[in-house]
Length: 212
Image (cartoon, rainbow, N blue to C red; front, side):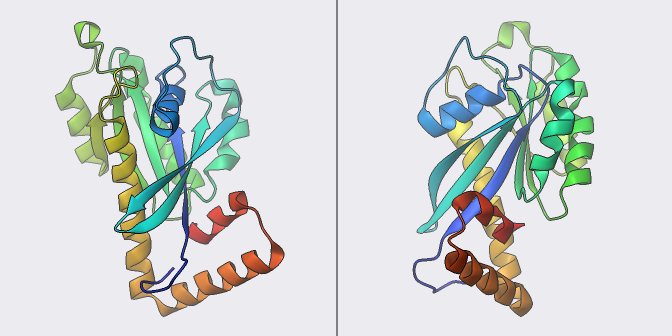
């Protein structure tokens, strides 16, 4: 994965977290397939999509996991934080309760992730301006307080969706690149992982451990 190597491949695990019905699934489907389902059902457990993004001429595969927001699934989904190097914490601008839950989701992310995670606060459904319950300023203020990127999006109108995901992916890429450049042992570790993964024919889902 070091600069200058040919055929290098990056696979980053990113989790979408937040309360139920804030639009996580539609954000993912808009980003991955440019689709929006007005009648999408609540996610049960975890689903994921893989999307390829070009970052500085390198092929980056983002494996984005859509975690269920319902409380009864939290024990199931908590294991899926493992290996995540990026997270979009989503709330619905028209429901303050979902905004109030953000800190709890951030605490959960910190608890379950043992590595540097690129984090973005996403205020979704900005098309619902007429029933807005959380101001842009409040979103920005919380993001600054917690050290997060911030963006308002609309999966319905495809507003800022691509930009939000690509910002997180680029930050992960930059974090990984800094580690590689600054740590010979990290480069060696990655090299060993890549060799063993190829030798064992490990599938792509397991490769997320390379970036954890």
